[in-house]
Length: 399
Image (cartoon, rainbow, N blue to C red):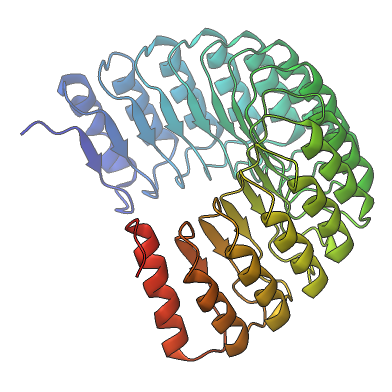
């Protein structure tokens, strides 16, 4: 049997073991996926791999995550990318490549015509590294996904990346979670979304974006016609007016299908704005409102919206405070809603009465297939009944 996938991650092969890999890459004609994650490979081992990649004609996926190749190792790999015409996915997360390593890779992106996915999360590339990558993106015509999570990128770096988005016509996914982008950087992304026509996924969770930056981004969604997924979780929103702007965007936007606003503390009032928008929105399929201080009133607003909404399939309300009464509101909604398939109500102070309401509602509902009630204080019999109803829905029939 021909070997197409080799997974030797977490084996501590180090540079000594890596020196044998070039021979494999030169002579093997079937291997397409190689996982070398967490093997203590440093720049010398990266050089061995790069030598093998120069003339390899089969390998399409290489995972070097959580090694120690650093900037010099990134340089070796970047040199290989100038010659390699096959590799489409490269993961270098947690390799301490820094801004210098990012520059080497950026230079390679100018010439490389094969790579479509590049993961550089946890590499401390900072604004300088982001600037270098932005230069590479201006000329690259094949990369579709770039992950820069946890890289200490601030507003200046965001500005450089957004300028690149004005010229780049291939990148569809950009992840920038857990950086240090603030209101200014968010405004740059808002401006970019008004002009860019290719980006479909933007992840800005866990940054330092406040009310002003959030409003700019929400307003840009009114005009954008390509973005389908936006992660804006865990930013510094303090004013419910932000939720109002996102709600207004949902009334006008006809392409966004997934929106994550978890842990932005919109409360009941902010939830009301979003719920009102859901009554008329026909494109959003996934909404994440985890940990938003939503109580009984917010649950009622959302439940009422579900009676009218015909597109939402996944709703997450984990870590809120809807309680027994809130659970009853959702139970009433489930009797009428025919599109929701996944509902997450974990950690919501729901007890047996609330769970019983949900169980009774599922007797009539034919579409919900997943209901998360973790940390619900209820009888096992009630949970068993709920699971049986869900199982029957997954099979396409009712008891």
